[in-house]
Length: 435
Ligand SMILES: [Zn+2]
Image (cartoon, rainbow, N blue to C red; front, side, top):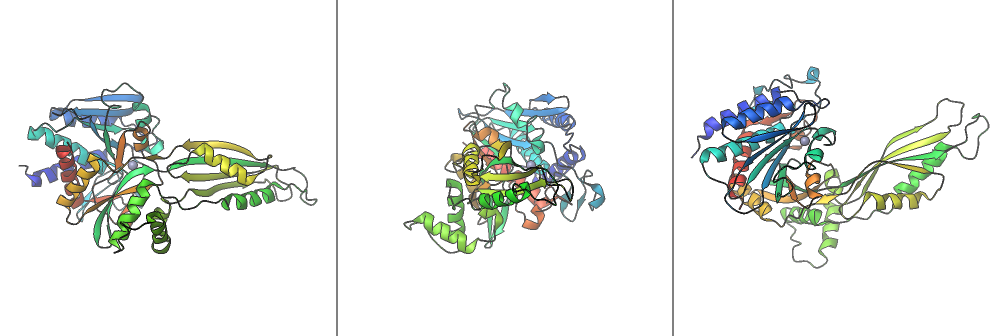
């Protein structure tokens, strides 16, 4: 029905244009790219609105009506990118160079590449003249890379028709990779919660030649040891259980019918996946000391010692409860606690029509493909929807290696042209087929 050769060329040009509009955050200044997208969609007869959270911080919403009564499907993306130091890059990060079958530039993976797929999929649906089974909303927001307060966090509080009534969201957060020789697509179904907390231990300042008993540095070292001894057993949530089950199956271990399934999965994770940090992070509450500060001069006793912890929490836990656990293990009334950031974990069930549809379409487009739920230690804009009980999945429909993933937020970020083309087709099929 479509001439995919010309669509390929069109999509490449679109992504080049999106990359060339510099939306480095800070300052973001997403209004330029939003206006570009608005014009692009209007040319195709698709209406859209722009909502500024602050001058220049633009969020865009486009809608394509559907025939059924189903609640809207949202395809989500963010317009901003992280900074890039062009001196270190092979091609200018904002030139959108095409070379060696790749499109190079800041945002190619995170996430203007997926934005281009979403835009093209929407436009193709419109051109086909076919009304999709349910309403599609394309939402492209500002400020994701700085926490989303002027982006999705702000937009969801506004009175945007359809936004809060949506049933499903497709966003960034997961990718396809090759695992045991099989194309495994990790669909981000949940995100760990966050607790950043600063602990302060007081000490008595004085001449260091005459030590006091309450040296703040010594006390803090003991506190760190107590915190790191906090019992944190392996915990399986719905998402990580499904992920481990699939991985065990791919490795030839069929644990499906076993009694004590969780125990078998835990054993499997301990034996076979010990060194895979991203998988281990799905199974434990984590605590990482990240900043330690004390003292001003070699011969002066410190008046305080400060420690910052970055804790990531599995579904079922809350920042408040976890902090109480830390306080219990520290067991020292002189210690002060300051919460720097706190967010609850989120999880969407994978037992949905959208998950099944995505899995089926991936299999059609990529032989042997498997779609598997995945829990991410890092937050995306999906949390704003999951807090409202809207199912949100993170999946960029591309197959990339670990090495390519390192370029995301790094140097020489790029997306292969076959991935761009296939990803556009997969996205189009999802929008067309989801009942
Ligand atoms: Zn991103």
